Length: 126
Image (cartoon, rainbow, N blue to C red; front, side):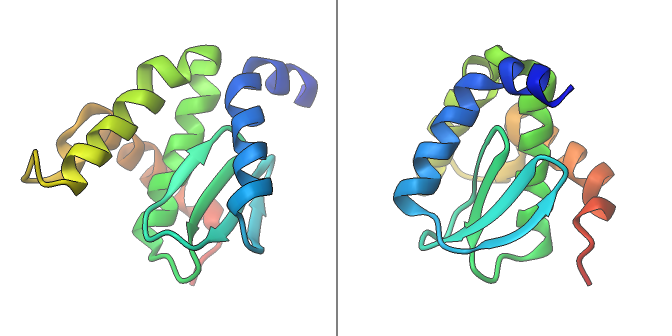
């Protein structure tokens, strides 16, 4: 089953692995195939089996990024087109204050919030 999931999510797993090699700090935890790493940036990114968050990321960020890993699982090779690229562009526009309001109103972020909330018990955080 893991091999099939690897093939299904291959593009984002490869990019996630490259990001891990270049930018990741220590692994904070592992949930199934998903590995959550700390990194130097204040934002989070999820790429297949890899999540990158700040060292002391709040629970909401962890569950949100875990929600993105679920999107990757569901969408497989379509993840970058349906979620990854739109989410990245939205985050950039929001960060540059070109768009304002609730960050989580964008469909990729709203969906990640919903998925993350339903799986947050998997994070085993106190």
